[in-house]
Amino acid sequence: MSADYVLETQGLTKEFAGFVAVREVNLKIKRGSIHALIGPNGAGKTTCFNLLTKFLTPTRGTIAYQGQDITAMQPADVARLGLVRSFQISAVFPHLTAVENVRIALQRKRGNSFDFWNSKSILNEYNDRSEQLLADVGLTEFCDTKAVEMPYGRKRALEIATTLALEPQMMLLDEPMAGMGHEDIDKVAALIKRVSANRTILMVEHNLNVVAKLCDTITVLTRGQILTEGDYATVSKNKDVQQAYMGVGNG
Image (cartoon, rainbow, N blue to C red):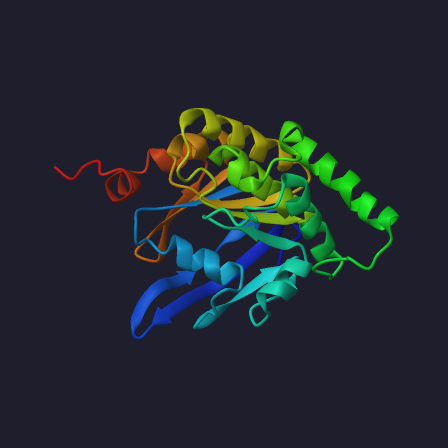
């Protein structure tokens, strides 16, 4: 595995009862880049994403992260290596405040769910770091707001803050703009750009405007296989992509 790439797959394949959802996918995610995985519905994006984050086991093929073979590893072990996933559906605790949500993520990083028995000084240390992370994602004014009471786009920012609490070297974002209006999309896109400093990001995303603005490299999947790959200017001009993904050229 080249030092230029943080995540690499070879021959990645997943079959379900004879149906091949992902077929011989060779991915190379460049270190420090924002990389998008796009394609029409049923293209295999989610299956591929689940394979990379170890929520599914490949039928064949290998996955390497930071030069280490992680093909047979469990999701929690992969996360401890710095490969951390956020989910399409917001995964925060709705009835806890923003600070409390981030604090739980910080405690989880240490291997504990809750540190009720620890001294107040240790808990305050979590609070200080939680507030700093919330400030990093533009949520200072929501520190003491329960997640359930926050606007949808702000919940997604909170989820990114909890992901950052795990100190990821690589973040995998599953449709971070799903269900958002234009204002929230712009805010979260700017946030992703900001937190990408010194990190690698792989995202599954349907919004092509977001992909065009944010991503260095785009991999297009169709029928479980890589159709093409490149920057947005290259990919968007590809006639097969226009037909398969954008519905152009169908008569």
